[in-house]
Length: 499
Ligand code: BES
Ligand code: MN
Ligand code: ZN
Image (cartoon, rainbow, N blue to C red; front, side):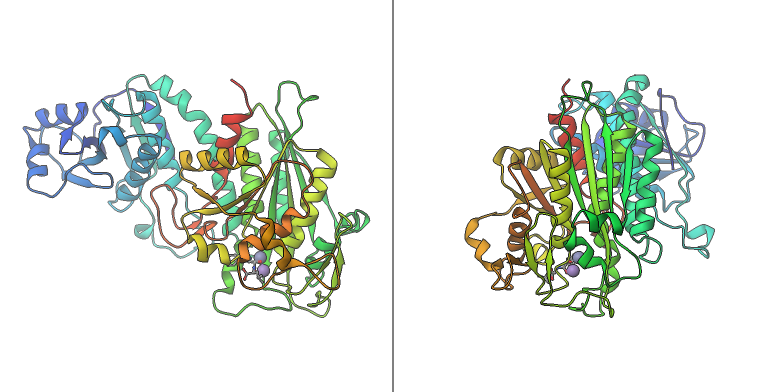
């Protein structure tokens, strides 16, 4: 879908969206249009339940006095609640609403909201951003969809006074959306298309944006001693990879230690020899969601030329059962030198992360380290599909991530990373085992990761419950969500780019 921002003018056809605040208070444009149409809008409202609440729409078809074929009243809600997220949700819902009507183009008039939290340019930019985020669709494998079943909407224009300023506010948001879309594409691809080598190839496309991308093959991984990553990958016909992506945008590159972002990249998780049940196993194509987020984040940073140094490291492997697969009870030696007894081959994410975390710290000495992983089913039991689980050894970092998540609508909830749980992963045969008992499964997984963290502020975000969604949300259509891209982009912009 194409998005534009222009100066206000009454359209000469098509659909026009105008705002109504709660209690049926018309926006400036709505009021003018109501006059032109001889009160058609007020009358339409009074014969319906439409109140102007967020998510409410009322369509007035072909009213006399305007050339617009369809005037859509859109609920803006209470002025004091109209913030960036509300504006984005509005933009997203407009796209969803107009996708069903057969309209190919829509113009959305955005007026100042008195008593709202946003300036006019900001409001317009966020409506446009929400619209773009919602317009995402992964339909490349649908060859037989009928034209009338496809979303009709091709173009959305936000009309606002001071369009130049609004466009300036929208530009960086558009680039974040590019990162989000890239992540959603990667997560949506099936595992016969995206496996370690092809996912690495996708990461390589970031080189065109000035990201330095290195791909380590299994020979190199062996030289580096990454026994934990190699062990997970050894049962598959698709060899594992480690990809390093570097964006150097800090004004003084030399004295800026990078921010480190690590992603779990299991391109398919059968569970290995500790095989998963058949029902729902197809979902495990998105077990590379963490690495997808890191790739999309690097894209967003590079596209908007973020003034920061960031390194993304993603550990890619396919977890398969086969004659060459690792067995329960195998002991592997990680790059850190620590040995791990693999009790359950389905607890593979922490194994690949152990080597990626260690590698990143050793080579890049990051000033802060954050990993993302679809790590445990247990986090879904704890937090469902709304919040991601946050674990951190540093209160300030945890608070910053919490705040960033709230601001962008990708909320995280901090879980305890307490030593008392650590005894669950003591092993009789090696330095540790890769699973505890069933209790506190997400916490023992995080504590396992912590054994590979040196002296650096670190956070682990368990996105197992939020990487994929089975229902539409205002700015996130069902499917791959890219949860984490917007959160981390905001975290970086807020704290590491100066002003
Ligand atoms: N990829 C899964 C976690 C997962 C489960 C993500 C469901 C999304 C939805 C992970 O590799 C896994 O299998 N974890 C096990 C750990 C257990 C063996 C200790 C789990 O959560 O069951
Ligand atoms: Mn698993
Ligand atoms: Zn997994």
